[in-house]
Length: 403
Image (cartoon, rainbow, N blue to C red; front, side):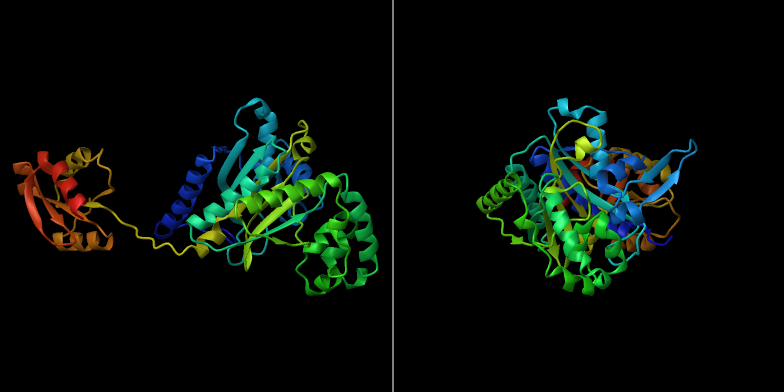
């Protein structure tokens, strides 16, 4: 199916490495995992993401369920988590730092690193207004890239809030009206609905027009400017370098004040503050900040060498009941075990063990079953020995210690 793909066993270890690294970092900073439904009421995204955004207008998988209610496969994570925060009264919980990992869905043209079903890792923090939490979110994001040996540049901007943004929106509309015929079709539609999105348009003609547009930084209120300046100071304290990008606005309406992206020819992750999202979804006046990254894009950039190793291979020469007994003996052994059940020659089994990068093969046949023994073969040195089954665990510990 176009835009959807299988993640095969030979690639899965990269995914596991990325996700386990992210989980480890989140846990070390006190973030707790949250899992929300893949299917949400459409209104959650219309009110949260913004009904004038490209995501809501063009990209959502939306349909009516059997009761006639409009539902949507989640196109992003934050709005659903904000909904969960409200419905489950998490404002009374001590855990206001959350992270998530899971699939998202957008109907758009598939391209490298971008699919109609894609996967995001993200973090959200609710109820902390201090700009130090903005810096912490960026620090965590940066640390993940460092652990994965991925280079990324940080870009930041101040996009104002509902107090100061209306004045800027007005002057922006006034400016773009003079160049309306030079704008692409999408930006002509955005002009009166969401003019800030024009600043982020990738169309070359629009980019030329945007160069002369009024700067948002000249219109932000005192509170937004103080928050932005403080965040920059905290970033400097963390030795995090950044580039200020006046054109960085993000594609989701819920963002306010401080926003950022990590880039490396393409956007790898993005986030910022969303101080009105909870109230827009019917909750209290609770602020928030977070980020999300696309797993597919990072997977493409990871240079980790993936080896689909099986530690122990049981070469079962038609003594399946005995093989299952040995499998049971190894149930608490801290290494992966592959037991063969197909009728093969010993030669073909050992070839398969090599393909699986196996460290040790345990060879068993009728003679071994009768004598309650097994042959332990070191696949790297080709040395092997016959031992009693009761010795197996100790022998294997010795083999793995040496190797």
